[in-house]
Image 1 (tube, one colour):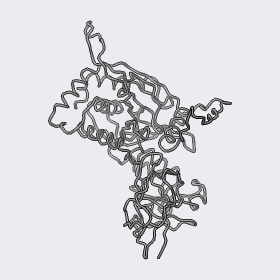
Image 2 (cartoon, rainbow, N blue to C red; image 1 turned 60 degrees about the vertical axis):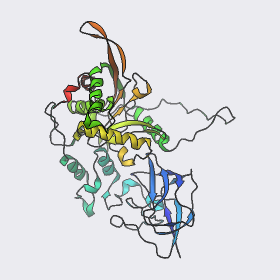
Image 3 (tube, rainbow, N blue to C red; image 1 turned 90 degrees about the vertical axis):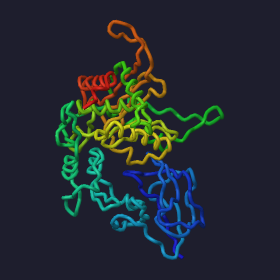
Amino acid sequence: MTTQTFTLPDVGEGLTEAELVAWKVAPGDTVAINDVICEIETAKSLVELPSPHAGTVGELLVAEGVTVEVGAPIITFLSDAVAAAPSAPAEPAPEEGGGSVLVGYGTGGGASSRRRKPAERPVRSSVGVIAKPPIRKLARDLNVDLTEVTATGADGEITRDDVVKHASQASVFRNIETPEWGTVREETIPAPAPEPVGLARGIQPSSPEATDGRSESIPVKGVRKATSSAMVRSAYSAPHVTVWKEVDASRTMELVGRLKASPDFTDIRVSPLLIMARAVIWAARRTPMVNAAWVDTEDGAEIVVRHYVNLGIAAATPRGLLVPNIKDAQDLSLKDLARALNRLTLTAREGKTSPADQQGGTITITNIGVFGMDAGTPIINPGESGIIAMGTIAQKPWVVDGEVRPRWVTTVAGSFDHRVLDGDAMSRFVADVAAVLEEPALLVD
């Protein structure tokens, strides 16, 4: 009888720890390869871990509710001949420690992943990709799948030029109603050195209160931990500026009503968010810098201008705030965009949003109107330069042709990274979004 130990794998780029939420097996259970053995919560989402082995469950090494580091043993398997899970090309054996290979993921680091600092050597993924950490970060910023990049470096290593070339070859969308973005998917332009921004000196965090029955302590972990870290990083690294405009959205409400009555949309939930999403995509085409990103480099900084839209939608879920995004939203028809929004919302509510769905966003919408809020000053999602808040749509008195009439009114607010955009670009973008909400016919090709 052979005993195999399965360690917690990295189920997403850069994962360092996860909470074991629930076991789906018990000691003595018989499992096959790819049977779900447990559910873990990462900083991004709930993930079901499949078994890399066939055999009998031996011992559960981690209790439910415990947070464990990547590479830590979590379960043992007993079998006469342990079957290897089907996977991508085999990885070189780790220098020490070692970890089981999870289907679709790489080895679970352990001690070997900490033998050298990441900057000292390339990192190899589960599918044999060799790329240094800065190149992986660049690929994430450019929304490039490294497994699809042709490597030209020594020993098959992916270089910076390989990533940029691959990004430039991807398709872009066209709209004759607005200026074209050209054939380059992304480009970089020199960026001025940022002014130092940081927390005020001498401010210390408050001491935790003693638990005396009048208060309680809530551990900061999972989504809340990731959200707090990201928001602090964004707020104290990107200088935020917020602008807003009140909008007569009566024609948007009329269009939403017509779409709901249309046979083509009978199986699709339609809301003003759909028109807002289409407006943001259209406006980003006319002001590409709102869809750019500030990237710090070894030589200083650069601005990456992305000629595609991975549209993020901030979603309040039982697990906390998630920001999944719709990949290449610019290529979708109104009907397909509506379906994508439906899937995104349903998946987020069920807690099944994958880490991949939350990576690579270029600009975000937060619909605070569902909470009855008129406007706000949202914090930019890290890696982006703009976020748009849509307030509640309510009937208010509005002057039309010199007469006061009841109209459906909302407020569009946008926060922007002032390192990337100046006031004129911010204002043009918000004005464009408002113009579409006032007259959705602008979206007609």
